[in-house]
Length: 330
Ligand SMILES: [Zn+2]
Ligand SMILES: [Zn+2]
Image 1 (spheres, protein in one colour):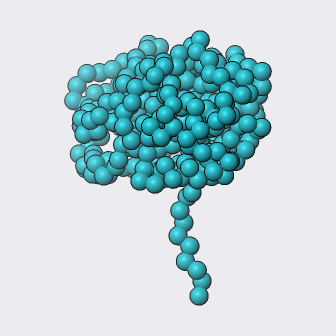
Image 2 (cartoon, rainbow, N blue to C red; image 1 turned 30 degrees about the horizontal axis):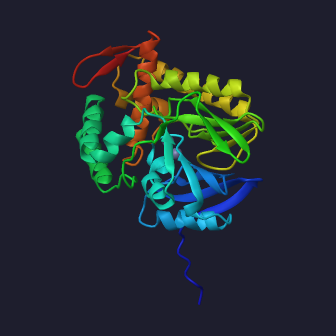
Image 3 (spheres, protein in one colour; image 1 turned 45 degrees about the horizontal axis):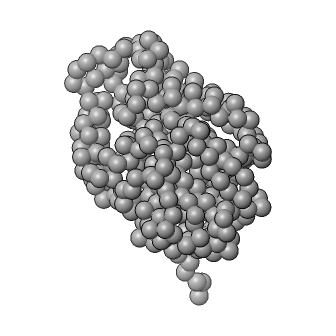
């Protein structure tokens, strides 16, 4: 009789360079099966860049991945988070507690705090934004039901011991890593750069498979910030990118260009969608993304459309027409 194999992702660790390890940790999200944390040797232990999400068995997954690299959690000397999304920060509290080390992260992590401390209030606010953006009641109800069952993925909210801002350096046995503020994907996003080896720990700012997301509602123009952050990273001249999801990649410049191109395409589609007359953000979803709206990605797609509209508004290309629901005109 054939053995029944239950398909379950496991944490995995692998050496990508001498002293640099990729820890691939499972995620419960459809279409995003895992995220990366990176361990870089330092002071008889290692600096851990990102943490994976907090889930019932997430600590053992991280320990499993570390063990595959002959590392153990107690030897973490410092936790550095590229940004405060649950898949990069969720286990920070647990790890810091186990290893007795510090956490360094960018101070603009209000977006995470609001979500983790009061997920119901955040959901209520999201539903309000969705309603205001023209989403009908029925899909809203399905989305609310879907979200209500979800965990925040964050073990506990802890404040960074040090603010990860431009000018801060992180010491490892490989040498120093410099901090570069790269908001856009999240207000708290930073990239870490190793100038001698031209390595870039890019979090979700640059991914091998280009995929855009912007936290909407915390800063005036997340898309504009993201485009600026691409320029910040481009100037570094990285040779190898260690991203927050997927494998390392070398053609960093091409990926930066690819991101710019995709943002440009999305902005054009939003504008094209408005040529026939004013529309709500919800009406624009099929113009930009086809028929891909589902409860699982509704918030994701709507956030992006609102971020594009806000950017076009800042550029003076579209206008917000107040009302219930709110409409946008080219
Ligand atoms: Zn993220
Ligand atoms: Zn991520």
